[in-house]
Amino acid sequence: MEKALQHHASVLEILHRAVGESVLLEVRIDGEEKLYGARLLALSEDVENLKKQAEDLLLSRYAAQVHAGAGDAASGPETDERWILITPLEPPDGNMRIRKAAKVVIGFCLGLELFRTVVSFRKVQRVETGQAIELSWPPAFQRSPKRQQHRVDIPADMDLEVQVQKRGAEPFTARIVDLSPGGLSFTCDALSVPLESGDKVGLSIRGEILMGTPIITFGTITSMTRARDCKDVQVSRQLYGVQFRMLSVADAMSVDRLVEAVETITKGGSPSGAGRPARKRLGV
Image (cartoon, rainbow, N blue to C red; front, side):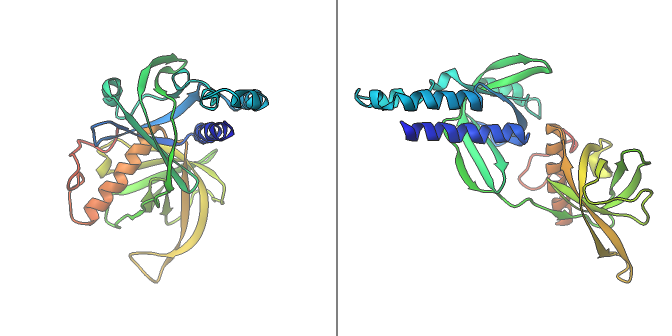
């Protein structure tokens, strides 16, 4: 019974961390290769309820052990009484497809680990912000080392730039040097406002590859280094690293696809990529 409680506590702790860190979920509907994005909204249980439940069960463990099969019966609430709530899927066509799915695979990263589990669709709930998807409680999580975030260098001749704005200052345009799902680095000739590590900035990524739909989000300046200019090795410029913050599900997926598209182009392919379905634009 104690082992069952520890298992249940582990699942709940992982879910609470995912909710608290607003992680991006990768959702795959059974039988499909397409990935959808979402975020965890809420759980049917909280930590205090779990602690109270654990105390009550541990106090009665000796009484439970004298009954055959009592250990299994005392392992906690029935699975079908618990649920997780996620935001609507992006792209939105997944919100209809998930209703008919026998199984739904969800995955997300926490720290240096990747977590995956299999759940099932239950129903659509009404929430303050509109609608949300209710899924069954995860029975367990499969853990594996987190994959390294893929970072691509942006060719100097590629039409891809970022407009940066620090609160209370005028925005300025900079050249993106490299890009990953978690952030980017940029450089420019002159800054209209001084930047320091820890500064919060607004970001608007623009370029021909985005077909007129910029990716607008926020970020935090995480590093400042000197780097050689790719066009003139005799010139060094300040290079700023930015970590993305508060990306919407749609924008997070757009950044991920932008990284894939840039890599494909630099390798001589088309933005749709070999083996990937062609898309009209990169935005969701």
